[in-house]
Image 1: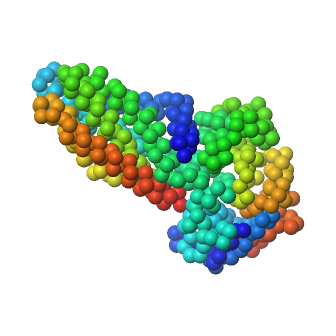
Image 2: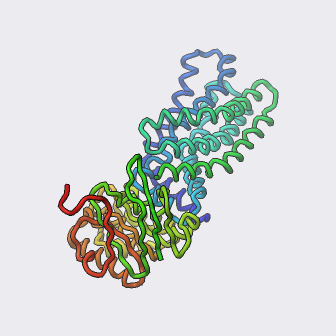
Length: 222
Length: 211
């Protein structure tokens, strides 16, 4: 089974390396949105520190949603997806591998870059660490949840808008606790509770989302 | 043995077929006829398990395929209209990934040999995107040479292929069937394979000559 997971991850990473512009779109979107706020609002450090958690998390959420479209669409177009459904492998394992590869490509670069971008908001070293940690726990959960929406809207016209409507309500808890963790650290309340909640959400998504996604893929492939 | 029992499929508000019964035993080839839109592809996809039939069932070795999805998938190769190859990967990469997912990993050497037999010598390490339509089809069909599954379901395997490739593919299918395999295929081309000792099934209500 690990052999299969490795094959899928290798495949998707190779494809991403040969088509780098797709990867860059998400990252640039995140960088630009996050960098525009300090320019637009002005160099009032107190305000910037206050809005930073929200801005980072909303930008990460939108970037993650922007990338969703590409999760299954290409495989659906060229027929590799239906072949995956016809392999003797459990579909949720394939889904898990695909989502993980997708997160490595679109989520991880954004997480790693966030402390650097955080400097624009005058965040302290400790807060930057919390920001990194919260995104590290939150973005895979976003990818997992989003995969359900992406699978359900495969092959539909105007699927992009529908995906946002489907997954945004499910994203909100992650947004609240993600941004909440950073905020709690800024205001000195302690971020542990929020981070634990984020971890719990990630675990829940890890268990439930691949199953829902595989069921949705079977429906879409009909 | 593959059995189709009382199968019915309704797509939208059209009944494509109903009360369909047939059997396919080891060493048999089924040629599926029918005009455009008569439901050939739908039938093939239903047999694979990609489409849920409205009524009836498909049985493999006596058991409904929907109850033994993984086991049935191991025994089946489906090659559809879409080639199921990634344009940015090379022929060998595509082939090795497909075989790995089918649960039958192959070495680079085996993949090269299969592609060479399909007439793709010198194109093995080019991204598939630069190949012609017929060559892409050949990459997709190269899976047949490496896969040891007994049931082959081929939807229009001869389209886009040149004469030599059509002839070669026919010998491959014939060897598979002669070796105790089963194959179901659709084609509108007149090929020698579909004459003689094959089962055939006609879908649709139009007679020959109708448009």
